[in-house]
Length: 98
Image (tube, rainbow, N blue to C red):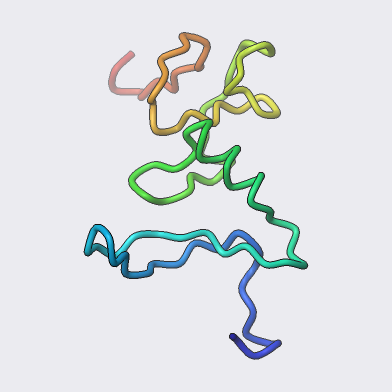
């Protein structure tokens, strides 16, 4: 338990040692009275918002052009780990590759 003034935000990722895989892996902090729930985590995980064990910031997510795409959340493609190539993701172009 952290002191009241040192609390992290709900959904904070923290590295913990996993006794099953013998590696340090990120775990999402879910509190009973927090605004980040198990359902929020499951949605982020199932849509692919975690990339290499870290949650991608919403501002870093690609824009999505299809409002009916299951990975489109508020105009952003939450499939940041690219487990599904839906074809609606707006690809950012690098100035050197145009």
